[in-house]
Image: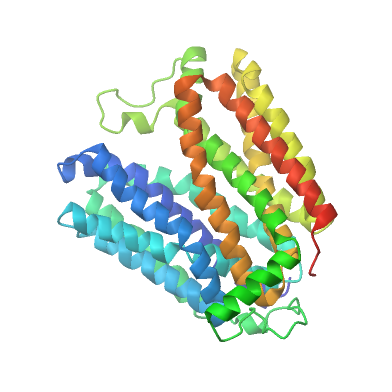
Length: 416
């Protein structure tokens, strides 16, 4: 990558990390908000659902805006909106104002994935490697963001913490202003769109036309794959901290924080392993990016989904000893996040650049929207059956993902 491309990667990776930092700091802050606003977990659940819901469904209109106005302006708007929303959180006097602030976060954050991924896929020659580094930024936000929030809450008032969390978004936005997206590489495809895929217009007719263009190339099969990958991701991660804690609690006895501390449940050994599972995903992101630059990404997905299916079936037998349990847990973390750059490279390969934003908009409706049903699926299986049955379900989802990736290679049409 040349210097201009590296600046784009740094800008998008930093932005990606912040999106997930904010996303996963919210559950940590809930432990404080219950008492601060004298409310119930159910009421706060509605508040969070509103924000997360907008984060998912907003990806599609976000993708449409990206195709019309370009990626960089949308990313800058996303960063400004997230910073503003957390400043509003920090001064929220009532629960309705807090709900409005979280909704603003969800709405503004929703445009990031179609904007960032569209920019990378149309501006960088080494697409897979760039997507891998982008994923590393996201994983660092996923793993370290909530941990940093919890540690800050031990020393500072939550209002000061949420105000401080707004500052990194301001810093990344300031850096983004210096990034020239028109100066990078020569990866833009010869289809009449500009380097970031902008067409400068938006209408119902253009949206329908681009959607028909995507469907004609077999994008529905790609959409089926990303939906299965999103279901696996959310089903696996939603109750993973509790599952890890339950298993490790039966294998080792480690007390990291005084049990009387209000934050004790954030520091049990299971949560540290959870952070480790998310952190090793950094290596998975890098590996997936390198693979995507060397083989057709859809072929890599066929193999990876098979690996995820096998690891799911090994999870319960591995709980016999600490060593095997930790090994399988970390292997799942690596494999789970190796899928992401391969999946994103596949979306880019099977969509024309003039509809790239729209294609990633549909993609993240599938991953974050339909994929969100994985939380309900996991909770239902754990309530009615148990962890063993949950991981069998995960194995089936991964197998269906492998089949859909195979179908992509046979029935969809590459556009690059």
